[in-house]
Length: 276
Image (cartoon, rainbow, N blue to C red; front, side, top):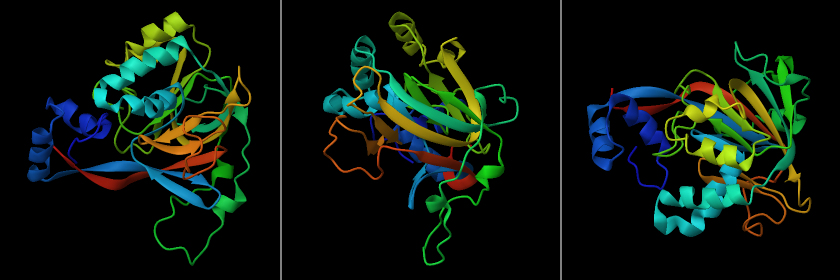
């Protein structure tokens, strides 16, 4: 993998632990060395539609910054800081609900909940070719829930979301879990301070942030709390997965609809070239 985008979170996660710069030269040397590392893969399902994610999924503030800042792509990675400040000043909050299966040690987060699996998503069609995601009996798992309003919901598979954003400092490449970062009620000044801590990962220590590991996850996105006729954007790996009503470029087609999504994790399904 060679860095060629604005964020480059995956390659930063590979190179940073061994002290290498996030550059094309360092990445190329890593490929030549030929060391391999396993990587978890998340399967995002909605009905019979599936999307495989290796970096992250975001809804709320992070997704809005990531996607809407594309108009400033000429700035490079600075576009995230510039547009992020604008979005904090004009802060949006979203109604919705999230459900999750916490990893051992994180069971105190949220409240107990039951989950009825989307039967359309779980139908076994023998005529479908290709990998369809992990075969997990989700109804037997111990689910928890959090209800909105939310400022941001962020799922991460690896530590870095961009070259200057240590989004999930405890994330591992192949531990079988996703790191979940949730922000709910957060004053604007506190949020501004929190965003300045993204470069070293200390934002997860804020009392306004819930940070945990999950095995499975369900997102039920809603409308903005101040403008109920407007909805948000769901972003996965830097691309729009779903666009809600009256959201940024809402007339453009997206892979999924702005509604309930189900996410499961396949441990070590993918393989990356690694510096060691």
